Image (cartoon, rainbow, N blue to C red; front, side, top):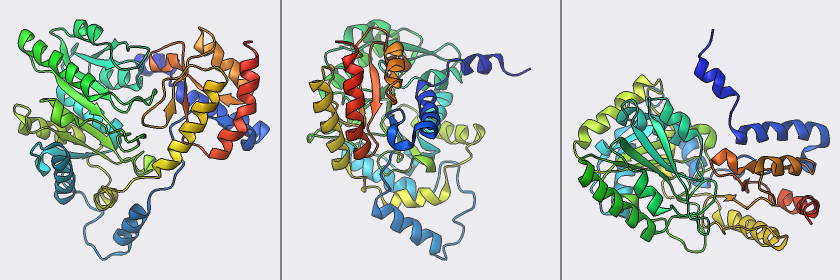
Length: 393
């Protein structure tokens, strides 16, 4: 009666959403203050002042046509602002024609993948990874190929990566900073990936696109700088959103930026605009295109996230958890205290701790914690973690 594939996939729906919904259920039973929900990356911080000021300005102005259709690619003036900002950071020439405004990063990825993929072509992803990539690739007849990391650093295993490239490889998705580990892939690692890609493109006589999924690029710590993908890769396509950097997850606003170095890039960007329309997005939300253009260089309070990271890292390692210290985003990815990460997460629920198993990110044996929550909740959760750890002593 319904799509067999979708009905089948309902049985393996997102662990993140499952735990988030479980949190709602437990809060109704025990009270929200007694449930420690680390499940979902839903920014708790309010948008910065620049966003709110711009929103008021545009809503209260006499600006005509703000709520009408525009080009499927978005407002030209907004796209030009983004292009010039990216050009300044990368030294790669960009104009408004290289930018397409989108319904968040998820919408952007779907637009890009629909524009690139032919049936059975492959997209490489680096584990652990945001597993909805599988659905996005599958939407257009593609297949994901998962490459594991170096477990000491959670940077990509380069030997495994090189072996994974075939004549069917169309694209690579690089999520940097990474969800779920919070690791920032180093410039050295990314340049090594580029060397492999360049060599393989010549060997296979093909083009391989590098999709940089980077909604956390403005949330970094310890003076870390996220390497610029446009500067490193010839066939780079930036996918970004303002969900995390400006606390606008519910507004669904992002963009695609295609490097001017891509062969026939004008055809590719026209394909993006076409797919934006035919996928049903039509165009990105008009009002928030204007708002983010006014607030391109604003960001949420990163120091508050760093405070949470430091507190959790220090206290959980004290309790015996093994963790690669995150350099960005707002996630920790500790090693579970037993091999079965799903069972470990179930045990944590006895103490109203809501964690997400690493299996939900294609990497069993670990679990993810999202610390974009109140600091009070984090502090109050420590006795629950102590009780959980006591089970394994």
